[in-house]
Length: 148
Length: 139
Image (cartoon, rainbow over all chains, first blue to last red; front, top):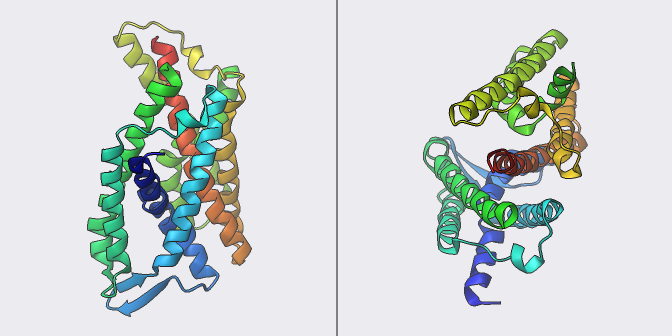
């Protein structure tokens, strides 16, 4: 396995923007409900998220998605695990993961994140990176699964 | 008749639920649950399915592809075609329970988050099958 592929998959499992969005909408409310401390309210609409729950959740969701998509796409067209694990446009994808890493950094920094900045600046950034990755993935599916 | 029955299933496509259902869900959650509101929302989604297929039909006709309108309602027998609808149905069921009973249990909170995850995966499978369908129609 080449170094670029290792870097790619480390970034994919740790900094997937889609998995982070899933964390915000699906996992974070459950953690709050279960009274598991996953954020710190710093007052004045500023709060800070804890890093460990985010990373655990992102790794699990990314892994689950990878398994699910492999099984689903294999049911459409037979493909080897090797073919599935060869991503295209790695550099652009890694750029999206790096942006997400910065967003997670700001959400978890000691100064906290103000609610309006999170909602109006960082969340749209996550949405744009997510859409980019979805489009790249659909292009890969078109070339490898459907036409290939 | 077959078209109408098929559209009742197609309304559970996660993409349809996403575009049409989320706003209605939020509104029902805010204003309180009523079966009439839910039924009218559901039939709104069925009409939305017809509208989307109608637009596709017109676009393909404009591009020179003359196809019968029935072809849009033909569910292919392969098992993977039913995955998005199964996921849409599961998440819609959980959201329905949330709307009607609003359980405060933490177990239900976990179930709800799994339903959201299921919903996201359903959207993914719908997108993939949509791209596959476009390819099969246009080749």
